[in-house]
Image (cartoon, rainbow, N blue to C red; front, side):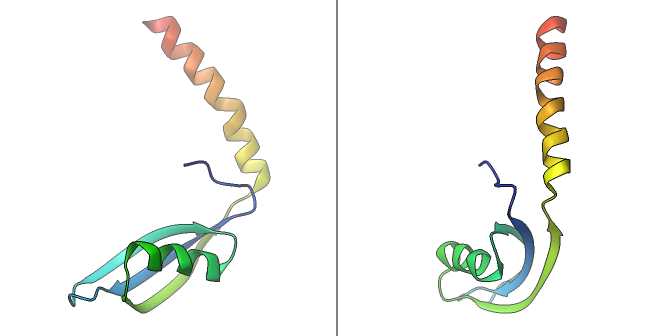
Amino acid sequence: MQVSLSTTKFGFRIRTRQGLVVANLMIHGRDEADAERKLRQMYQHCEIIGRKIVRAAKSAEAQNLAQVVPIVRRLRSASN
């Protein structure tokens, strides 16, 4: 899954419809409503116990990663 540069990572703590507590669910979304929509697609009828913003995606950080990935791939192919 490719994450857009304008997404934020949200952390959720939920109670499933069977009553199990699931902590530290990390979901990317454009905003909190988008992340919650994705969460409810995966865990239908869950109860959200807690939520937090974990980290906003930084465009400079993402660009640096995009520059590093090809270098790592070249190094891996050269070592094989």
